[in-house]
Length: 240
Image (cartoon, rainbow, N blue to C red; front, side, top):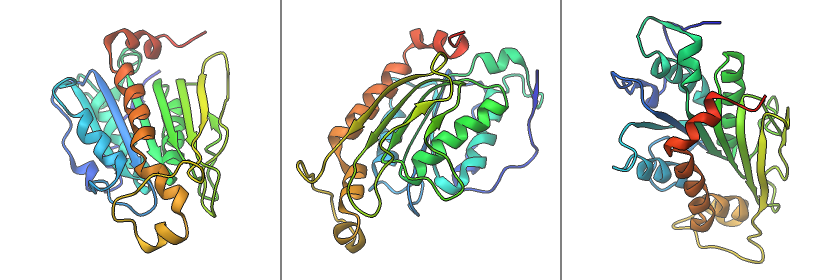
């Protein structure tokens, strides 16, 4: 089975980034929540991407997108996997994919939907990470598609906006759920730098899930572990 690349992607500032001439060893895609810009360094999804672009993973492609630009992320992944630049993804090019997707709030839901887009194209995903995942009305962020090898969910239960408490695998044989991890900011609050009035008074716990250094340190550890070479076999050869 082959996948033909579309000639144009939905516009996004992040989508304007030109992919590398050679296919990267790994691809890490992040999504910010709400109406946050993809390059706003006050937000942990963006800060994590900045750290991942360090010298320890020089051949890893890392980019953050607004949650509404999922299709742009998808098109960039297709272009990056197209090693011979012929506009068509072969079965071999797909099998080499080592993709990690993470996000916060609406961005976490976008991560699951992007994994679903890749499933329909026959492309495997190493890991999805959801942080206080919030689905838009027409979205389903609860069921992880079976092209994903591993998935993990971090959530907090308080406020008018709060994360999904549980994710499940569409096929538990193919996807391992690493956990649904509760963070309770009522009992163990964290300080967010310069929170907005809305974050401070309306959605304080949801905002803390985005700025909690302990939580995002766990996300970073999970991502970095899967960037190691020995994890390539998981994506190329998912469980039967």
